[in-house]
Image (cartoon, rainbow over all chains, first blue to last red; front, side, top):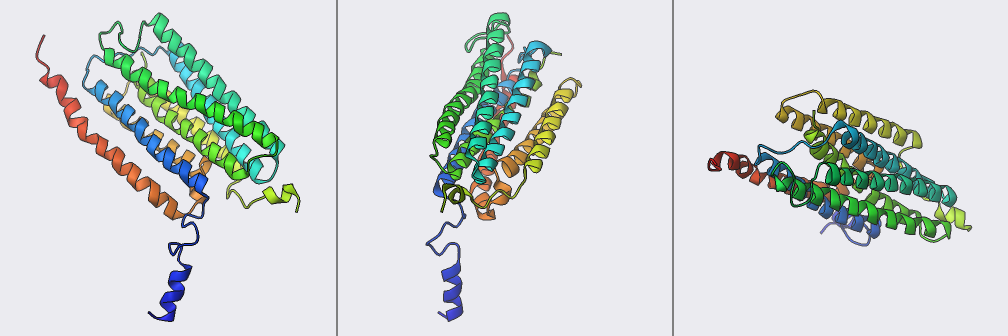
Length: 210
Length: 107
């Protein structure tokens, strides 16, 4: 082996002794989780779509008010909370813990508003449209099953995200956790936002009652 | 070395202004989606438009908010081709789903 080859191997990103992705293991671990979770949500979205395709009498229960108005405001809340989260990571990267905690709290407010609006929208569907996970007035029980499974799993992710952010926020204020920890939390929160970017049009807007 | 300087890392690659611009574009695209929902378009065109807009929105979130634009290409290549391949594999059942209404015996 020539000396040139030896030098090339020793400085290669894949030669060992350093991260080939130039990232820390926590962040890489979160990315792997996000990819696997993206597949779970994809499978549920496909299940919803295939159920819809195979049932020509699929219901369109989402009235402009409150369903579409509420879900649009929920989208606004999540998108805005993603902006505040990225601002929090930005502040933390610049060593400003107080500002970072403030931004994380704002993110939590957006997430909490999302959950409250979503529960209100669910209760409207259950009480006024008589949709449950197992039955509905249009005789297509798969609608309720797939709808509540998909949106329920997403809401569970939001609630877990709120708990995660609360832990991050108190730790940041107490001088614990590094910027990379906040960034990893941010990755999770943006993923929850990203999933909603598919659920909102494919579930709500495609079934808007016109 | 003080705590403050210990925490300062090299960062972001993007500024607060960039993040705000991305947020505005995401809101505008959401507005376009809501507008399209009430335009009485054929289902296939509507589905394609929604999917296209959602993929653009997802790409913006991943690139800027999730910072992937500023990471190494090797990270992207490790994670995303596999994800896209697996998602495309799920299309295998589309033919079955679309055949079911035709195969259902008349009541």
